[in-house]
Length: 444
Image (cartoon, rainbow, N blue to C red; front, side, top):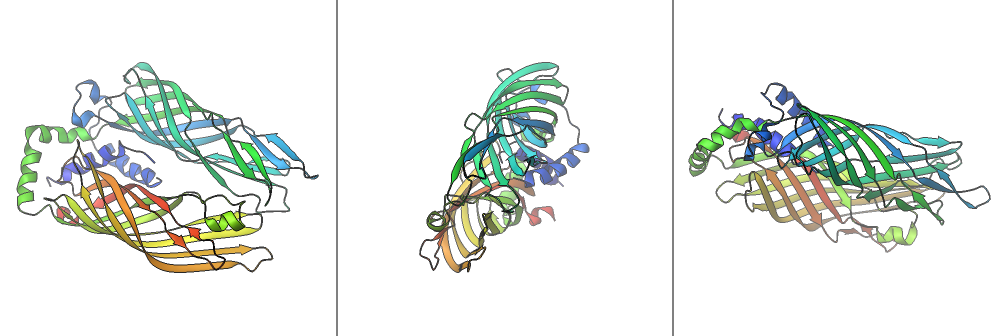
């Protein structure tokens, strides 16, 4: 029972270090449910600045309006023309944390809708993806106060257009990641935060294929107006007394000497794969297709942890694909991977525990392409691959029966040969933003 009292603390502590994945939303719902049964105060950091008051979780809703931007298209006579994009509106869910005792705001915003815009037969999807931001408050967020902030974010934009029904698949979907600047003000009333802000996407131009052989210049949305409401709270304070009294350290040492903190663990979470660059095959034969966008997949792990050496060996499974459809061509690359990885925890800084180590994996790679009026192409192979695993656990103490982990894996020079000569590129960085790690032996 002593171990279980740290569960809520571990979940909240990890969620307060949010950076970028869809599993965040699902886990936050669990956290909110737990918080409903927990004694919470809004601004505990105003009393004293301790380890367990460093960060506080927040969740809420936002309304975002995107303005500006122009689309390019080929007229019926083959001339290059342009068209202004209309204002778009989208609701978003925000999950984040106030850090450094009210001075720093880290958060992720998930769009719930990204509507199409139409002008006659011309249709565009000018959408923003999952945004990760950092805002700095020169004066700490305070109850019944109005505080200005400045910041920046990592914001992917997805753009696709179609002109007329004769080519129903239209052009490709282009993913462009930008780092816009942010500014605004936050008003605080108890545990309620109201924010009015402006996001400036100063580098908003991209090249877009208008046909198999012609590129045009497209402008993404340049200004985004944001209005949000968030509720914030603290759940790590419950572990503060045990930590300060020395009880946590005493129990950890006793169980560690008995080997009871060693054991098997299970892990599950959603991960993303960032495709690194264009394939030589597409550079040679499909120059109008962009590099694959980010792929999302489940990440399942089973492993064993050794407490004294603070290291673990795990077996992980991931499966994902990248695909494009444009101008009558459909293309898909798929990867299935089982990796054996050894990682060593480097240090423990107030519950932040980074690790690093090698990974060896068995790769099942495949590529398929179909074309209107063409024969199509297919390639497949199975091989060993070598990479590097790094990341961190948020582990306020070593007694957790479960905590949350971030994994990053890098696999360089992973290629699939084709009969045509040029290779399909599978180089990527996998980013598992939140993975739930459970030690069954510490529960039962």
